[in-house]
Length: 196
Image (cartoon, rainbow, N blue to C red):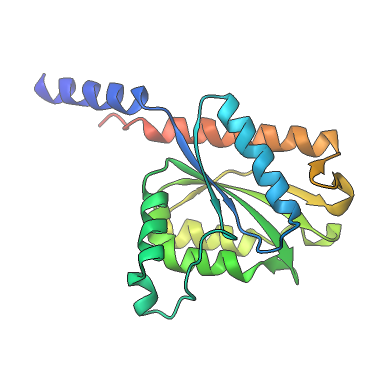
């Protein structure tokens, strides 16, 4: 009876706090298209009552991972704490040379342990349509190394989907909103402690 009461209280507590999502803009380019996607997703999540922590790598001066002192850097520690505090992560990343950019790889190397068990979704911006599977290497790594749950719905957009700093393609905008909804659904389900 006591154990059941504790489980119910844990479930109520976990459900009473709003879901929090880190939206990561991984591009270092001032006129980033993936950042436009990240902003659109952040707004979609906020409209659903989600607490959003917008992590813009242009504004976070992370050291390069050296497998040593970089882990104790104050910026690294602060960024790790931001990831530890959220229920899910939505990554907006540019695709360079058929892969994610180096800034995102560095972020994962420095903070990956704080992604453990979290839901992760991907927004990708690329120059052409042939790199649509580029995040699979990172997705596999996150699943294997940090037991992340990957939302099986990526959004991939080329420059034709944008007009200046706005999304001009209604299909891409709708897909970003659908991914945001799915990420929230996964995060909500995983936040509730499983019955034992």
